[in-house]
Length: 188
Image 1 (tube, rainbow, N blue to C red):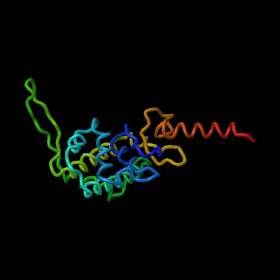
Image 2: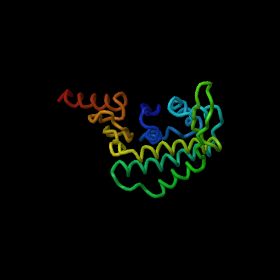
Image 3: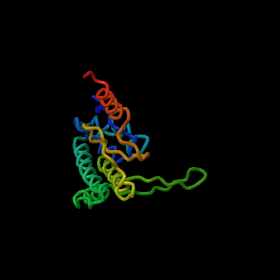
Image 4: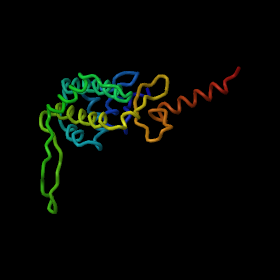
């Protein structure tokens, strides 16, 4: 029950990987993908743009495939080992499928630049997600990515504090603390 709402607030690539918790897939339908994009709409522009278009089963399949490649690449990178070549190629291919363009405009006072991607909606989404993964994988902080220490949780997080042990205090931290308390105080 607790995993029905995706965990958000981590780097975008980790938020995507975390849509596959131990209890099932939170991106099983295009509507669930749309709901996840709605949760992410404040973080990247394509999420807001794609809320107005129909996402297809093919778009969902592309995102789920990309998620698997990101998960594999992050798992290797966080342990300091070479990510699978197929994962890196999938991320590169997704980015090439919807090239990024820096569009210039005049806002009445100065020149502004807005980064956009060209191509169909699903390709743009996959490209933005692949770019977010590329940024995480190239960041030395990827070595700090951790897996939640709760026994039944597989979610990843990038701790802001070195003592953080759980994906979320509300999800796993409280359950672990309550279980420890019960073990200490259970009747003999």
